[in-house]
Image 1 (spheres, helix red, strand yellow):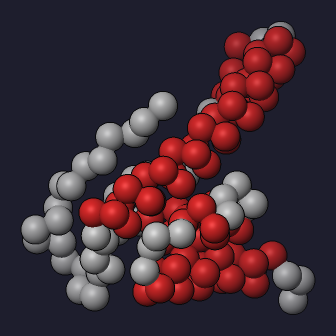
Image 2 (cartoon, rainbow, N blue to C red):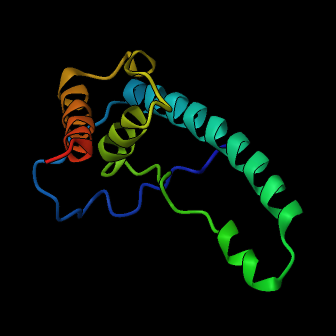
Length: 120
């Protein structure tokens, strides 16, 4: 399954200091993104089948909702990849080909999420 890339808002994006992604980095990002998405979707399919088989009442259908974690917009990719690394759904090695500025931002977000997991 491939999610289409939408370049909407690139020309007049209000975010200053946004990372610039080269064509080869976008290809690397797309490959890693699709891999993690497909892996998780397979898990979601299995869970949905198990949950659907157990549904006895219409109100139980609400538990089958799915959140929007995967969004292939260059302005969001460092957060998406940081989250996926944090969850163990993506390895940093799968992002080989990205420049260090992007890897640093991805590591930073993954580290932030890990720090939130630690007890205070």
